Image (cartoon, rainbow, N blue to C red; front, side, top):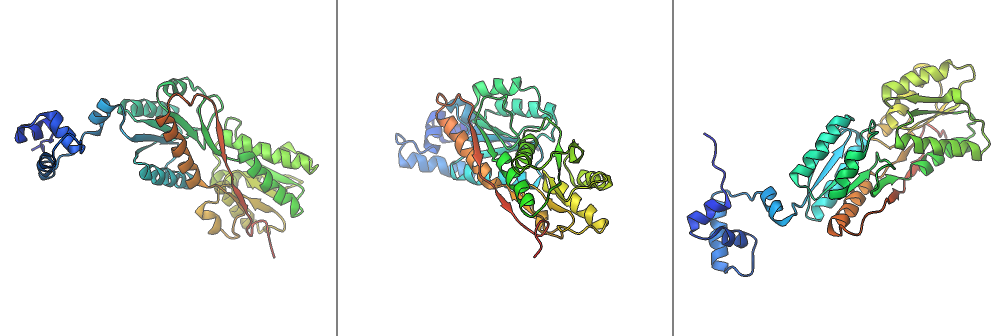
Length: 340
């Protein structure tokens, strides 16, 4: 038998009070006597009354719920961002609904629509890598506070929270140059990835600043920047007559694939070929040799995104500009580029 849901109306009937009196008593309204408040709370506890936050949100136009959409919930870097979001939201009295788009643009659009239907106060979104058309996101941005983080797009006029991607990649490649490497390959994503393009810009800038020739043969593009692709691309790089003496992979997963393949062919790391990754995942210290990588402060990104979103929720008329907030990252030097 289906359990009966206890409503404000049910409490009011049993106590012979009006619904508004019961509601105000539960919300500790100063106009309601302590005796009535106690009576209402006792019955509410006894009957396991749970307030309907959506009904409350409909009345007050505020649910204290924030929707979060990410491409992949199991990705290490994403989990660190979500931790920052959840902790900061909790301290500020907000609850979080998390959804995963699996990099599916239709699923992403459906989730955005559902979040709006739920009446969330604001939305944080890390875009699917296949996001090209952004009209639906801009429409939602016009009615609901919305902030992009990590996977962003300059086509959407809103606040965007990212790390200093270009500067971070520059420092990674500069480090390789400083240890004497002159032929540095890059494994990156296709041209439509914001993060990949920023990291590629940093790579190119470092080569130009240090007068190192840019060779298209060692600039490799993949659709999915994974461990498997890291292995596959390393095989390609090793088959080139004048092979590289360093490989910069724009994710740790791909960099670990690089290391595994180099070890398979008994290539000395870093003496023959040095390797740098990006994100400082938990696997970067398990792999042997340990991976030199860029530390992405995920928790700080999540906490910053929530802070800016709550500011927009609280001051809806003040935020119309396109503002990019860059969070600083650091290069962590380990054995894949340093022997000694």
